[in-house]
Length: 224
Length: 224
DNA sequence: CCATTGTCTTTCGCCTACAGTCTACGGCGC
DNA sequence: GCGCCGTAGACTGTAGGCGAAAGACAATGG
Image 1: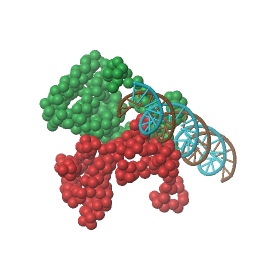
Image 2 (image 1 turned 30 degrees about the vertical axis):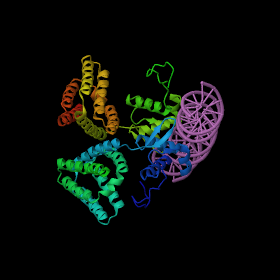
Image 3 (image 1 turned 180 degrees about the horizontal axis):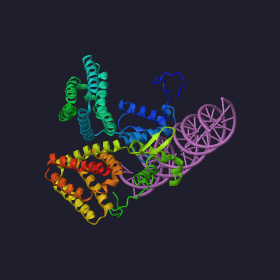
Image 4 (image 1 turned 135 degrees about the vertical axis):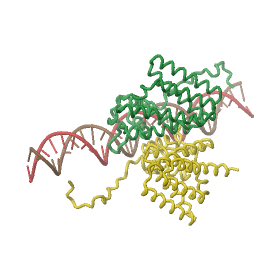
């Protein structure tokens, strides 16, 4: 038994700088999603290593992981290149996202308790405030958190992990679009939460499906 | 222009032993799926390296990839451990698989041409022969190929890659079960192909959903 | 003038070596 | 006898180095 008078959970956890590869991974992912590294660009290991102040090994391992998650293409004996999104691929990815999110909504509707509903409504309200204040970045962030919360309510870890990856890539492809459709999106969120609150699996699925499909529509309309 | 008398496409392509990391990856995956490496077992890099006749680096990169795909757990500063399937996790994974396969069936029903239907029926026939001959291994293999073919017909690469990973893990968890349910499975396959041939998306989805759900049932029944 | 070829530079793939960290075990004090 | 501490071993994390393959470019021959 710990007989010290330490406050139980309040111990700062002694923040240790985790494995270098993870930090390199996150750094690179950040650079890619922010377009600092452009699609098709050749990523030279020694360059990145020097730039980040580490050796090539952690960089290699980070690139390896980025490759399996579809952020970079690892051509043998030639190196890593930032993945170039295809029209078709973006569409397919969105299809999958629709699928995963719709299922999450269904499961959330089946599982959600009153406390959870409250949390969703709080997130939604905050998002609406952000939209009202024209704070696009905050709105996008709240959007991500809301969807993540629904995933959490679904209670399916595997589904959540897959959706997290797919979502992040979708956002990468569709950022210009996503920033456009603020208001309509949050009206749909309200409807979605209502469906979940009622435990109506059918309707939750349908609403979420329509919700993500709207993003696709928006994208295709934008091209013309 | 090539003025040599080389036979056009028949050049053997000079099969090169691809990157070492990939071969290590496949070797390890084989060892895991065949239970030669048991769940929870500590994988020591230097041991594997020595055993495979390579250095630690390719092994590390392979483990890295296996980690992101959920085959091993990579605890920092402690090494790699073969992932231990949980009851809950297996169930969740199966839920996701159901989702992905059902969508694939729907898309296949929407896209399939007559040639494709023929290919499916060939595969199905071969599978039925394997079952009739009590060749369980062949039947399992044909099962995988049939599902892969349907994925291919769906024409969604992203979906296919996700499903391939999920499928392989599901098979790992459920191998003892899958080997049991031979005959019934292939009857369902026939029905599925019929639905796809008719282009009936609704029915294809439903049949595939029922098909994968049966596996879950089988598993839970088995426990009692 | 164009195709081909040889060389040269760049960068990757893999190996070896060293430092940091965790675990296990044995001794020591209580 | 029980529990704590210190030390030793093992393994991971990181760095640096060497050989080899791929691409670029210029020189050469037709």
